[in-house]
Image (cartoon, rainbow, N blue to C red; front, side, top):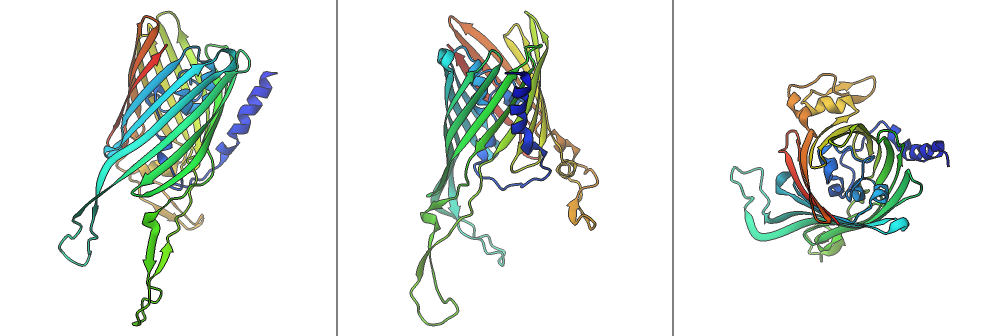
Length: 371
């Protein structure tokens, strides 16, 4: 098979990247978008690298490049005291390929139900009721990747997704697909992936069961009618990624990796993700990255730019940059990693920092074991 055929397969996955609109806040299961592993420190530019067990998240075709078993645990101190946990393992099965399993969990502890405050009074009535509720998100996945030639790999994944709050829940199935081609020139890799493809999901549960007065304005006493509130279904956070990775420096002492991803999500604007990783003696790794939104109106709005209504185009625009330019640090990332080999086992500890602009920064800590 010629290289042109490989590139053609990648372009098929790239077609959705040309859309120029965003449906902000319209997808469900947002926890599936929280990145993990080394890629989180590299500006989330990792689809073409995907050379460890974290390929399960970024691009399942990368599993086909693994030669040793790996297991990883990632802990993320997310915003608003939310915790994000990720556990995954990959098992190479010789020429058959590599299988991977993963578990993702988002937890936020218990929260107290408050009474409703009356805005017409000066006294706050939103006091605690003594009753608590919880909210959790979880996904369990199975992935497979295989080398089809000495340079071409492809893979897929399937995951069961569930969100729960109080006694309501929503569940669905998501599918991932990826392809990766190694050109053989200075580590240049070309890759594309599609993640979280699936149907819409909607909440159901006892909290949606209510009773209502059929004639509230009629003084007669009528028996209440039981009803069930219907929630709106929302799609999973589908994302298309196309990426390149390149090793301009690679020798016995040092290796520098540059990575670039083009991302198109179904609920936000397209981004260009830039990342780098410098490794010294395959022991110490320094990483950094940044994400740039392609929509300039959105970037200006992120700095507090004032909206202006454009009568000719019948839409709101942001022609001027705002004063809060430090908000552009949003999604600036950095990290460090350490490799340690003990006998036949390799241990890697990774730390990733991500600036979240007007929100506090997030911190990720991961442990990966190869054996």
